[in-house]
Image 1 (cartoon, rainbow, N blue to C red):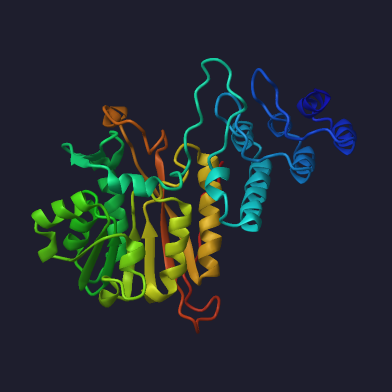
Image 2: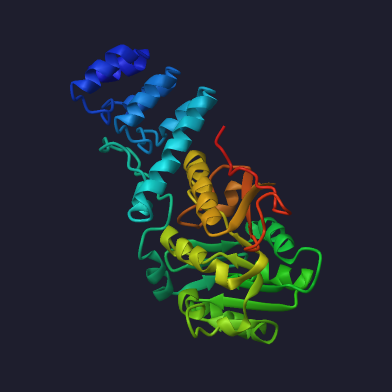
Length: 364
């Protein structure tokens, strides 16, 4: 364990010699699960961290407490190292692409010791959407639950949905708005309240769509039942109502590849100058991973011609909200980063009327 000792001491010379000799940079301390990178971060050894990352040390490993190297840097107020790891993580994801991204963003702890908790999922697992659509759901007071008591939507989201709806509808009532994922209809009620020219809703779960019809939503909006992948595909039932001035995405249990597929369609679904937003529950368990994936989304949207910024919104969720719910999808954070993406007109030159782009949330 010489490399672990060298990293804990911030001894770059000793670590360099060991790495050149073939020592594994991914090793970790058995008792704590702290990796070489975590120990170097704790020591504040920035150049050693660069060396370890270049040698292949995993940026997304978790120790036995479920903490990653980025959180070690945050705890130690090593902002330069925070930025270093974030930038490295984003570049890795851009190079590796979408394949396997869900697994990389659901990092695993070291082999578990007796009684150690399992790592929480950062993103929905592939195939979870199909399982959800085959399950029954029920409206339980101010929340929508599936048969496993996982929360599909909850009333505490209302302030967030109001902030989203204000962005989508802006000050006018002339926008054509598309919402993907009805759930409890919270954002749809707010869109109706703020006003719009046309309002289209796509809902994939048969029971949720049936509830929307019973509540009369098919008389207020263009209600399309089915998966958005079908409804927005060539000849899909929703395409006749587009293109749209504003699109909101909040489809339950879909993974990052689904979101990425929707993103690839945005240039043809939105009018130039159109707005796109989504419920930002990406990597909710870990603020560091959340910052990484937000920056990744920002870069990928930029490649599609959408300038994306993240607006901080204060939010408070009482612990009592989760009583009877199997899994939390919001974990101890008081700031929500609301994404707002603007489809830039093709002829618009950079700097001429473009939306000022704020950086994605950076852990600090």
